[in-house]
Image (cartoon, rainbow, N blue to C red; front, side):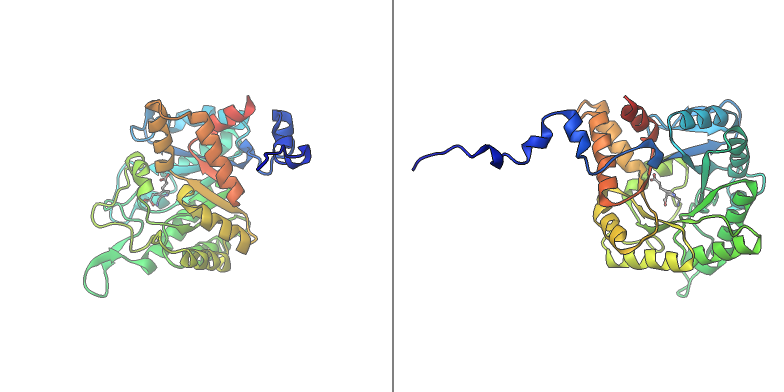
Length: 334
Ligand code: PBG
């Protein structure tokens, strides 16, 4: 048998890989800070800038820290934040969630004052505000067991969303996973003459162990049981499509898949099937894994993060909510 050299024309893939300029020219998926949403954890007090142990590089910030934060984000080209609040006190009904003078409501006013063009998105949920740490109110279910009461929770979520918008929020993002919450929020916004406000629904949100570091950050771990009675089973893809479909029917304007990295298939399916803007949440556990491996010297944080974010975009998400937003924006700019 004789070996023969392939004709040059057979070296077809490598021709366009010979320089960064050529690779950039033919790149199919582009990553830009304009696609990022940066989560912020806002706390009571003054001069608070406390690093979150489970999420290196992320902070609890008091309200006075927010104007500088907003300006930094705008200067990096990041258009939007997603707000989470740490209340002064928790109770059974999560009252600070819908208090006009609650931590998130005050944060919204300060951010919009400091940077009017920053898109302020608020997480609408009760888990950071309830003493039991669940995303809704507790009542006895059909079998006498304490459980999260779906229908009793809806008005509280709607009230929370309206109070955020009255404080100046640009988009509300329900993350509680009660059935019918998008419809309830849409109706409440309409009734308050706030029908111009978009809803970004955490549509396919799984009961995921990847939220562990966030629950440390938001002090929102459930005090009994878990969230599997309302968040999705990660095993279910068809049901994820039904969740998204339901939120669209109820009036969502942007739909979300969460977490992102274990669900690239769901992102791709949703992108194929629905024509709404699609967001993916690159959650706390995904961030913490990269940080830990990078700190141990096991991988290159910059390259791995950009690869992950590119994969989430390639799967089909237009919007990425990520704790890496600021670092990625800096890396992309250099
Ligand atoms: C509130 C909420 C959670 C996250 C976003 N909104 C936690 C949860 O559902 O327990 C998780 C975000 C992350 O892990 O980065 N319900």
